[in-house]
Amino acid sequence: MLHVDRVTKTFGSRCVFKDISLELGAGQYVAIMGESGVGKSTLLNLIAGLDVPDAGRVLIEGRDLAALDDEARTRLRRARLGFVFQAFHLLPHLTIERNVALPLALNGHGGAEARERVDELLNAVGLAERRDAYPRELSGGEMQRVAIARALVHRPALVLADEPTGNLDADSAQHVLALLAAQLERDRAACILVTHSEVAAATTQRILRLTSRGIESAPER
Image (cartoon, rainbow, N blue to C red):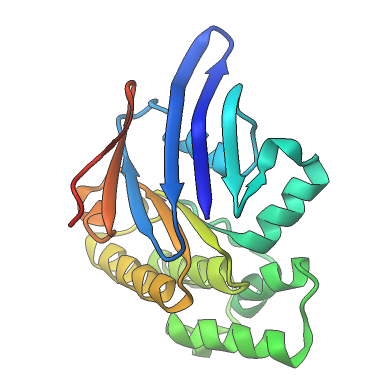
């Protein structure tokens, strides 16, 4: 599903990483850990097609992102990727229901089928009764649950989660992580969780560490 093939990225004279390779299949859930500044967010940006590598290739479902123009990368990102961020990035002027529905709208899906899918996700994250609330009316844990629903509502092939529990207390973090894992399994979506938290990483199927030497794999659990 995802194939990162000997990717190198530099900024000016600084080489962030060199010859990074990674493969991820449908339904696989992995954590990427590493020191600050090692390039974890840069790697996510390359996988999302928000940036292009200086060498190597990133393929999603066999499509080389560097071979696509900006419009085609945007369409692929909207249709096949989902994003969960540390800062939530909910739109403050939209209700919870409309925030969750946004990826469907961007992909041209509406009507009864779209409403049914939004209802399904709101129920799954336990926020159906808050559908008419706005983000400012929710707790951090609730906003992150909305962000998970939004990331999964259009059934993406790959979810990219960048420090999704960084702004949460321990109890909320555990709830959010359990919810994310359950929904990924249900939809058979692949996921990369970038985190500094050993606790968060332990909820995934496999832990990878990004270092100056490349990606080092921890043993399968």
